[in-house]
Amino acid sequence: MLLLLILFPLAMAGLAMLLPWYQGRSWLLPISGGLHLLLSALCVTESGAVLGIWIGLDALSKLVLIVISLLYFGCAIYAVGYLNLRRDRGNKAIVPYLLVFLSTMTLAISARHFGLLWVAVEATTIASAPLIYYNCNRLSIEATWKYLLLCSVGIALAMLGILFIAYAALVGGAVPVNLHIDSLLSGATNLSRPWLHAGFVFLLVGFGTKMGLAPLHTWKPDAYGEAPGMVGALLAGGLTSVAFLAILRVMQLMSAAGDGAMARQALLGMGLLSLLIAAIFMVRQPDIKRLLAYSSVEHMGILAIGVGIGGLATFGAMLHLVNNALTKGCLFLSAGNIQRGYDSKQLSKVHGAIATLPISGSLFLAGFLAIAGSPPFGLFISEFTILRGIFGSGQIWVGLLMLALLAMIFIGMGATVLSATQGGPVKVDNQFKDSFLLVVSPIMFLFLVLMLGVYLPESLQTALREAAELLEVHP
Image (tube, one colour):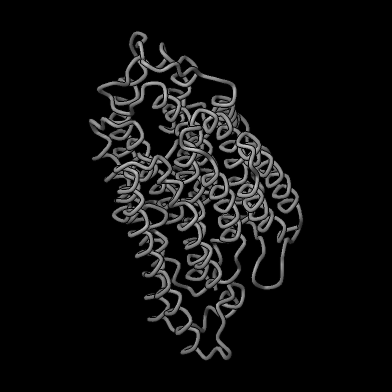
């Protein structure tokens, strides 16, 4: 079943390239996404979904898998309506690439070998680059090249990190040397410390570039700003979660080797820097999609801070991963509708969105309240849990600094969102209107985030607790 989960989207991508029917090709996306979600649910409920020693699911990967699959399914439904409006651009390329992107993310999530993980993460870059270039204009090609260049440099540094870890095992006496995660964890105490530390730094920088932690985030504003809304949602809620999982794999290894404190301090520093950068660039931000890109930098920082603190904050970070992915889905899809309706994403032209596009405008405003951590949405619970963990661990200054930066971000983001959504209706040249396929997915995402703020199912609590416990391993 796990192998089918990886190969099925590839088969559907091949079918999409051969299928001559435009609308039928688009509908392959929600059909594939729905089946992927069903298979993911079956794999998650299994006690041990393992395919040899190379591929398998543990508590961490199960959590990320179900989040990615749910996000993809919602974006796939949206894609049918979106691609129906973009017949001028066609869908013979974007549909197969979206399906390949799903397959590569699934492979990265289920990889139990650092080499395979590296290959899968690099494959996500190759599969997603054409999606960013979909509009085929000067800005989109600039964004695509920046994305390819920076992420390729990052992934090259990650390769060096993996080689250093292999050498740490060799110096530590492991014969034969292998990069299977389970083998490395079992012999972590024997790894050479200097080479392990060097490997961690390179892997953190490499996968941190893909995740978009500051100061490695510079590809995000351009890529998110120029990609279609559904692609932005998959990058901000999906690809970043996959990269975060890759960093967590390295965190597991450092904790098992007894060097978890060093790794946590590094993550904590990058997390606080990410919040600072996001706070600075959100002030007077005139582009609503670039605003969401800096919001992604912010929330990657919150994830890093949660894991960097440990304990209860790690549990909060796992919950925040779920909430962030779903809320980004709502925000990017509704922002895509607003951009389509106004033929712009600049505040100079976008205002009165609620009066002009009542559903999309309202969803964008509600999504802002959710992503800002306002009650009763789920992000309030996850951020509050992380802050409880921070203050409970005695790191008062970290908690106060985080609160101050979150307040700055709320004010900066709120000014842009309120300017875009408030005001009287605007007469636009095109005939774009909210339709069922374009609003049902963001409504679903927002509803789920609202429910997670009101009630946290016992099964989800157990999944979050088990995922957090994997990061609290001690030698």
